[in-house]
Image 1: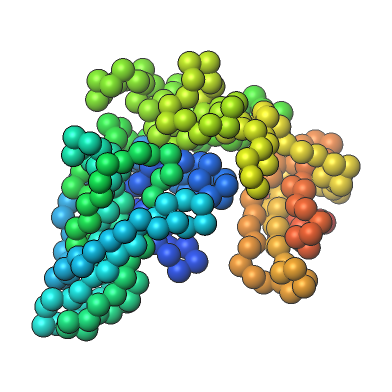
Image 2: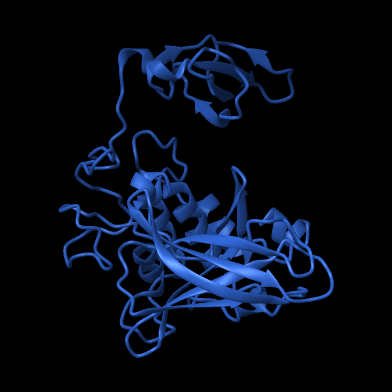
Length: 333
């Protein structure tokens, strides 16, 4: 949203992570890559709520690519599409990309994503490759690859303003015991959005529009571990309950948070906001590898705070800084 509304990025849905561009507009499921895609699935869900057709108009690009061929490959357990392109123009092209579409037997598009050409710059006549991961849960009859940026329209019926979306998140009061009254997890998010915007079926597909987005991103209980395209009739939305699968551990139910005696601390302050900062070190103990994060926690009147419990193998350091109103921050733990 910063890229889109503040920086004016022409393709803000492309999230750059570890040298790759991830298309948040593509409906990736929370369980992809053994659960590592969960955060990107959530980001895509939030984007789908806010974006609209006006966000995906044709984008300026000097695309003069010829697709030389493509073939399905195995990417450590999930399918991918690899291919080659050539710059047919008389000028160099930078940051090129191609659009990959999966089609069913009737020729209808059932999945669409974009992927960058691997060479950052293509000289006239030069060739390069592209590689796009594909959703393993989809069966498709054929593949179509075209040069240039993708998207002609939004892929969902909802188009909220950013203010409407943030207000629904901000104003929701959670009853989860660890929430401090704030929106706590995906289950709370589903309830908050359903309360604020549910009850519509703008695309007449027989599914509530809010439910449709959660289903599209895999946010529903999967008790059997089959990763279905749609949940069973009794499966609760807004959960990622699932049994163990390969290196993906079981979470039944997912809303429970593992605790240990070391998860609790009593501070010398109460009724104050505390910044909880977590820094993960490298396996050899070297800090500063870019895995830090933090959040604000409201300490109750007893001064007790519940901390995250990273695995001991992570060599994590937790720092607590009290933020008393009108006073200087204080290191409290």
